[in-house]
Length: 311
Image (tube, rainbow, N blue to C red; front, side, top):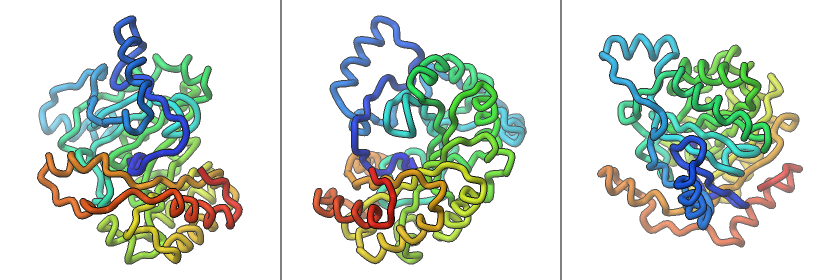
């Protein structure tokens, strides 16, 4: 969630089902209740791996399976529309992230050990069940997190499997671990949701605890390969909203004019605050309010002025 999922989305985003397979009669009734809300308000990220059989593996075997890409640590999954790429998508949230974004609303994905062990076979079988939905809606698979590139071999296995099934594939990433993404993996990725969290290196470090340059380097690789990118920027009052910082984000995204098809400005929200408290993590944005409509529009206009389609 990189965010994918770090900020609230604009537009119609209907949650179809969380951690479930095809809807039976009871599920359909529950789904209708879910649709009374718009994502990400309905996206709790707490539904876990229901419908994905986890496995008990000895530690040594677990490490070997993770190294060969047949076992991953999964936080949760969901079926959702108009949030994590085009159409209806199965979004798989991986456990583990090297960043510590101050505004992250899914801090329960920070540690890989907190996920459930799921085999590539189980996950690919689940993905296969939704091929008809993906075809009908122009959707597909999105792998998010946490950070998908914390588990590059497992991600590569899943992406190749989905790609071989003719399913549209997408990763949602900060790009910080872009060096973990091989050229072979890039061959199986149709779209990247690239979170450019700040344009100023010092603000980036304050926001995430990490360095900005790897994101730029990964974006340059994607541009060289012609892989479509939706650039994402989380707007946090008092943290990332400075005019010059936004201009520097726009400068970065302008490096990739041919493959960035849209820029998404994601307004900060407080929906993850309770998770920080429950996990015992210090939350520094307790008093931060969501950005005003006027501020959101100012930032969107900064990107529009560079010629980008902005959502």
